[in-house]
Length: 377
Image (cartoon, rainbow, N blue to C red; front, top):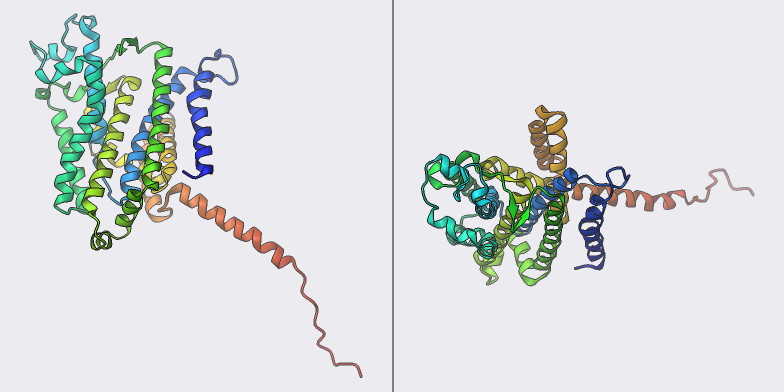
């Protein structure tokens, strides 16, 4: 990693991991105090940034556009949500060891696939393995068949729609349209306490820093250079003796795992996970984050995820009717006017400003005057 980028990452890590939690512990009247609501909101944004990193690694570097990453995000979130629901135990409304929605649906015994999630260790393992294995199976079938370009985007969008329909069914015993909600504790810590939310935020921030370092390391290796070559010309890579399918499968699995980890961190901080986070619309929004921030840069994806969701939080609170119009306008602007995102546009403006500044001294140099009159004898 370049020294300037490593220094910037270190400063960002200190601000996110140390400064903001310390400001959250200050008294409410302090000018530097960060409220519990704001810290929790930032934690949610950071989970989106983790997902955006994986999507940028897949789309920005390998050129593989996925419109179904909400599925992997939902798999990780549901894995965590199942464990949190089982932690409630008999403290639920119906005082049953079964989750409340199972009591509503007259389920008499805990389904078999729920039982392993009583273990915290298994849950942490499932958060990584379930999205990773699902991404491995889906990616293997797709890339082995040499599906690429817009066709791959279409089948991932179909995957998101199919998963949304499946998770909405009550027969899945996953809460149906209501999903999993009303979590009380997380690994023994009460979720309603500010200290627990602060701890979740710190874990999320550390995970984001680690995910960024991992993605940057991948891009700097030989595999990262092959991914860029696949993005630019997959046919040339194939003729050079490399297997594009293997490299695309690798980056697709890494991206799926990052999305699953992001979903697992999202569920306890927000307190709910529903099929609405799995469908087509949220999957497209994830692509807009990366496109608006600047794909192929990593830090652009982080800034895009954080910035777009911050604007969404403000617009949906103050001007709820304008959010979808803004989102559509942002996507059209990214396609038509700044295809390399805000980061790329700012980079071009900075380069143009430097060129203008460098030209000024040259234009200020006085040229010697030339007399056009007749020479004197």
